[in-house]
Amino acid sequence: PATRPPMQDGAVVELAPGHAHYLGTVLRMGTGDEVALFNARDGEWRAGIEALRRDRGQVRVRRRTRPAEPVAGPVLLFAPLKRDATDLVIRMGTELGVRRFLPVLTERTNTHRVNGARLAGIAVEAAEQCERLDVPEVEEPLLLADRLGAWPQDRRLFVAAERPAQRDGTAEVGAASVEGVRDGDGLLVGPEGGFSAAEVALLRSRPFVTMISLGPRILRADTAVACGLSLMGAGFRR
Ligand code: SAM
Image (tube, rainbow, N blue to C red):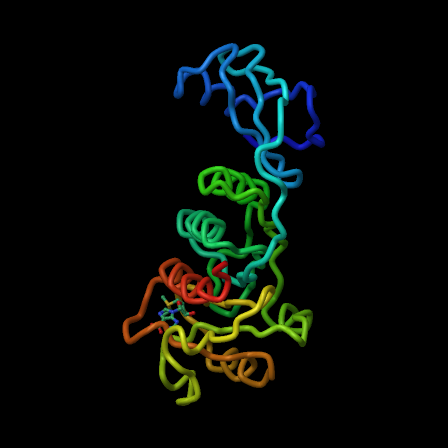
């Protein structure tokens, strides 16, 4: 379970209702059982269940089992999609090591609002699932031009472009295109309707942008996110 207060030996932590339910009803745990605890900041800890009722409970922190890890990984820029697809982007992105999610509003973005609290909850669940000790931030949506304006000039931005004309023969396909990827470099994936010609021109005018291909087929945006991040992930192997 994720908890917010600083973790220390002997501290008593109140469980969130969903976590209490999961431990008691789904996993059939009870008083005296041990669970793993993380708060996205202080590493992973073991804690013993002190009390557990239907949707309430407390655990007592015992010892740290994993130290906090330095956070390194790509930044994902994505056009918000339909609800389920956006959920999938956050879930898969968290599993694949995204350190920040930056929603971007483009001409053909259908969904202009994102529910930050809901998406943050999905990021927490995904971090728990993949045993990641930090939780990536989901930031407020920005217009594409503003997002490009705020982009750090010393970081590369790989833009997934499905049509050869958008790439003008300059892009490489596959892992070669993202060779040398570094911490904080970004991947941008467009909306269901793709990027407009003006947006492609805007993107290509930026020196930090590299247009990349993810193969000959037109992928759904959520599939493109998983595919692009997997390629970039090769640069973060330990
Ligand atoms: N409606 C658009 C079209 O037919 O041209 C397709 C957009 S696609 C569903 C959504 C996004 O996924 C694109 O903007 C692009 O970022 C990414 N994408 C999909 N397939 C891709 C590919 N083969 N190579 C690179 N990017 C791809």
